[in-house]
Image (cartoon, rainbow over all chains, first blue to last red; front, side, top):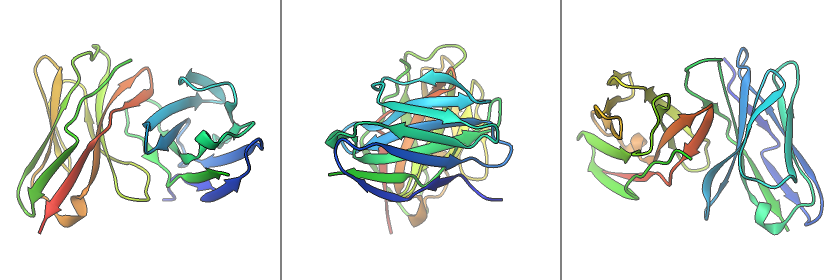
Length: 112
Length: 108
């Protein structure tokens, strides 16, 4: 079966611009969560969606936002990009309940 | 926040067992312990998870201390493909809290 699909794989943006990243979870997975990975801070939780509702949010500024659609696909948006937003952005999905998470390969965002 | 502590790096000889430790002294009663590993240029891959009892699957075994303040991931026979960064994570209210992970080097 298809895994978690993240698009695009690579992205280069200019400081001040905004960006939207997409995540398609495994069919049947209703929980989708987003993470930022940088060499300095490691993996950090951004937010988690379930049935189109944001259930949890990490400690990131309001420039980072997301949403989930009725088909469980999710998007993440970052506005007013800063150089420090350069990172690998990972999406993960799982079935409701106590299961493991399946991660996508990530979108590598470079802000110049 | 629920946090985990792991050694920064470990080495193992190929085909030898590997025991990767994790301390999570602030774990609460409903937190699950998950282990993931990440190869270069890939997203993390699920390995195993548990709550209180030891767990086995085709990839590894998870030994959880009786007080749940620590756990150990056991790879029974390390292969070169097991070289990765291993993350011990607590699932707290559906949030994943990653530590810095252990970089496992497998020596042929």
